[in-house]
Length: 151
Image 1: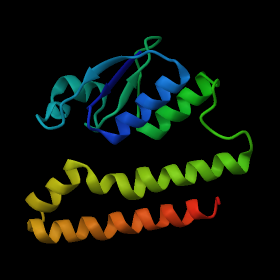
Image 2: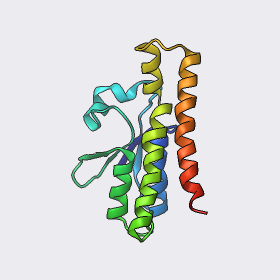
Image 3: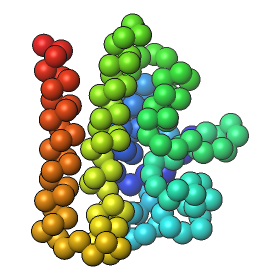
Image 4: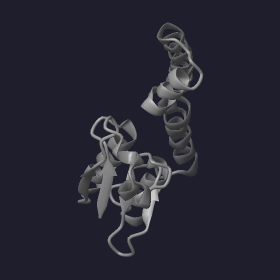
């Protein structure tokens, strides 16, 4: 099993933590996002989307991609110890919280989004930072409100 990722990638970190909790070993392959390695032909053959993480299972070599899909695979393939609660409602709640992080919060901080705002839309740094702060705060406020209901 090979985990393609970048050491600063939160999405890669999610998968790395799940692998560790489940005691599953994977050989890590560095994809340097700062150097643009993800745009090279070698990595595009693994993941045409040019994002990390990707998990290649030695059995068939077909890559898995997107951290939440990889986490779901790991949970099904290696059920112990479980990452999710036992009850359906608890699992749905955890997945909802994970989606806030992965879909509403995470895209705002990745370099490809910031670079697009700057290079393609010509948004200056101050405006970009205000935009990022606004939407990051919205995601964190939603996450906090949901978590507060757990108390």
